Length: 177
Image 1 (cartoon, rainbow, N blue to C red):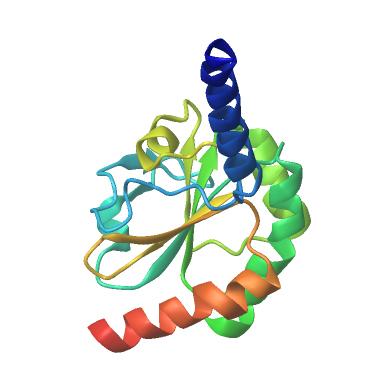
Image 2 (cartoon, helix red, strand yellow):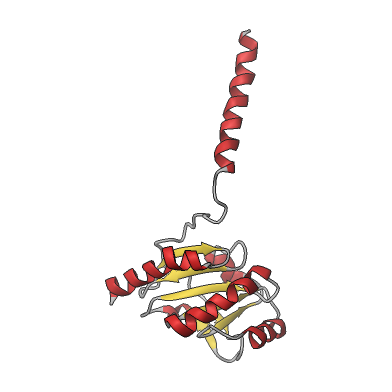
């Protein structure tokens, strides 16, 4: 009888881990960068490679940094909301065009519109890696001091905007304004 208790105990522990794991939300992947300065980076501009986009562009204002790509179907689904936020809410959205060709990315923006103040062209994905991007789209809220305050993995939805992102932006604007 005792020889069955050890395997049974191990089995129950594994079932417990499986049960807990299946109830986790994969969209809520914690980022170790929350509360830390955004990585230092400089990227060539997507539209104008002579223009650069860097961490310094994010300082002094509350911003959204959105990692996106033309090949990303979820980015396409999210894009109309980004356009709406930039147009009606006055949100400063900066883009990191992640592992994409310049031609495809420019065609994407030409077709769907450009909500970004500027998009940096991260063809190798190094800046995305520094931000901890694991899939596109991913959006980061960065405060005036350049500190990452929130990470949204996956598309921003209307619900996520209303319940989480907009209130955080308002709070950051009030705290730091």
